[in-house]
Image 1 (cartoon, rainbow, N blue to C red):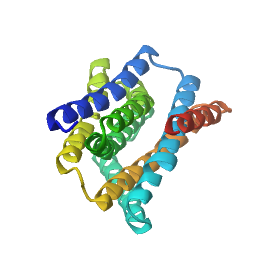
Image 2 (image 1 turned 180 degrees about the vertical axis):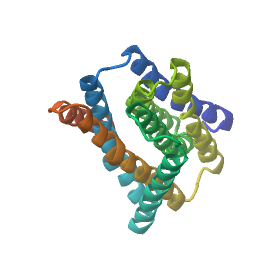
Image 3 (image 1 turned 180 degrees about the horizontal axis):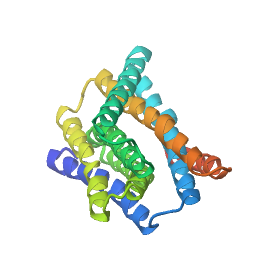
Image 4 (image 1 turned 90 degrees about the horizontal axis):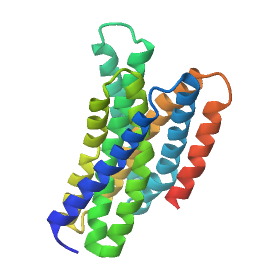
Length: 243
């Protein structure tokens, strides 16, 4: 299958449908209480950790080398820290609970958007290799984008973002995957080092968001084992998904 337009369309569809379904599921749950939200955030963090540790970074090191992967991780973390600082400086009032949830949702969305681009590259290059490989990669990516959509939409909803805007934002973060699929299909034999850097960069952004936002917030929301149970269950599900 070497039709660039078709491959690009599949990339857009996979990216949008995955996070979009996650956003719809988060809205279906309504505004959860602290205990439920603690579990959801912990669950999402567990899934994101497995995607980072057993999918993104291993693939980055496989395609490139340790130095490229390490540089990508560091640059991804630094970029998110910079954005986080700018968000805090531009806020006129002190951060209150709901606003911090809104910021968390947008940061998670940014991390998802960044990591969707190299996944789009994987879809495009997969289809250029064989149709079966491209389809297999697309299905796996669409499935693991669903919990990422939940992780993005749930804090946004708690932060007071309207349902329409939540759905819109969860759909928009899928667009970089279509762009990545287009580039992967056009270039075909794109530099392995470039793909490795993109994957590790996305891994770094998601690692900071998971460890710096999702896990601490899930622990602070509810005193008990709820967030830890959610984290472990999410980690186990993530392992099943990545394998």
